[in-house]
Length: 282
Image (cartoon, rainbow, N blue to C red; front, side, top):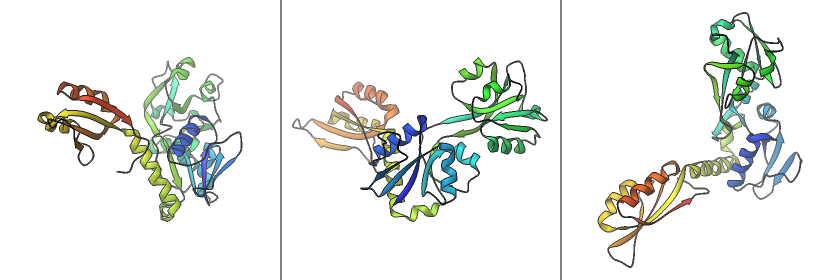
């Protein structure tokens, strides 16, 4: 039975569970149980702290794990990414007191507080900066006020928490991250159950980028309509009882849906319908 680690709480957990459910897996917990067995798909889902998942996968205890790229990198585990998931997206920055105009080079001899020490050590070494790293488990923003550190390095979303602490982001992101599926090596894809899971996940991810558009169009305007909705290979065109009209069905990028509808309407299309796709194979 395939053993897969899933984050046990937070937005990363919600995103992973929703993705797995959309891919046809039974993985949702009814309470606080540590594992859920999906007998139909021959998988056991084990709920762990996101920070620990890469370690369990790296030492071979579990076959696969879903966690963030930042956490995987910081764990220093010897693992391979099989599939990025486009969930749990984040950016990792340095932040300093707002009155300082420091760059990374100014960190020499200073203390940097973070929950991701290995990411920071790697970046400092890359920049040729000799600084001390103070490992904290959370709430690193307060560390400067308490005199524990001179600067911090942390995941930044809106930046509101930093501003409230009197801090500002400096420089470019140290790292950008998202959740992904990890294994000990890419050889895991030789396992049929792993291959099936990855194909299903990819189907859901692709489906989230597309919608189905259907509409009726006069044959005189069909070529113009097909240029607006070319589909993956080509659109499906079907005859209607009115010989001067036809029905068209095609996949389009979901982000372009409203613009395409406007353009189809402008050339005379009628009965324009947009339908979401749950999963697909392209």
